[in-house]
Length: 380
Image 1 (cartoon, rainbow, N blue to C red):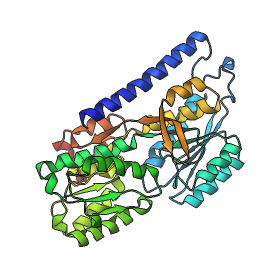
Image 2: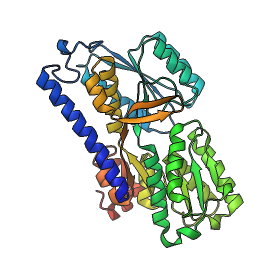
Image 3: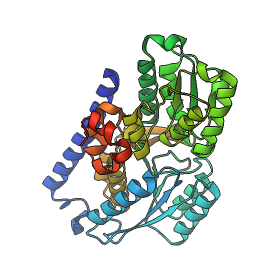
Image 4: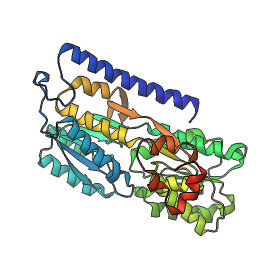
């Protein structure tokens, strides 16, 4: 990560932490609350601890949603509500129509607040309006949904793309200007994908060659679609002419690497990724994948749960302290937001990221197939 990125994320993290701390101190001094989720009657919350959070997640291709997001949010909601709150969870399996039905059902069931990670940011907007009309707050989670949302929490998505693009240029080094790369972007229905792409292009444009035949938007983020796109790029550009691949996430990166191998590549060019998926961490250790982007799912999920609880309980000062950023969607301006910082993941910082944060254990990463690579990188 370059110096500008480091300063930017450090300042943001510090500002959020200081704001939250200042709010907690001022509230305690005034005798307003005994603590978030403490059930203090003097806070006059809209609702007590017996709240129901509706959680709508978009797909299962990426294992993060079932492994991290849902269980972390559920645990945090319970913690903040003295085990009286609950989370109702649905996953749309990348089907926007199915997600709209799930949203309608949660409105009918009168959940108290919704956390929505949209399959299709535009298609979800009528459902968000229905929730608003029913008096149910909606917090856009991870992807910026359209419609009258109350808040948004995600990672700094343009920064994600910048980190990926900069890492690829740095890896190509002095050969960057003569290098031809394939650019495998995410789903055109996901607004995050557009932000990743914009951030990456800000680092790649003018520094590497991206032929028109080598740039793709990948339907539904599906690895099989990325693989088909990569096979088309290999046919159009030629295997030996591809010197790097920008892949927007790890699932696609694995499929891209498979396509390169099947085409006869004996040495895989640098391939980027995102999400720090377990198989991607292993590929990074073995040298098949160059890098990923580690996003602290615990930080995002825990803060999302706290935002949801604060919103439904009417704790506006805590809510405001958590949403100090502002973002715009195509339908709404100045949305209260939290943008969580990210880290470039390479061989050199696996111990300081996914292991330190207990995302994976050494045993999960260092299976017999990867033990030699783990030993070589001091992971034991």
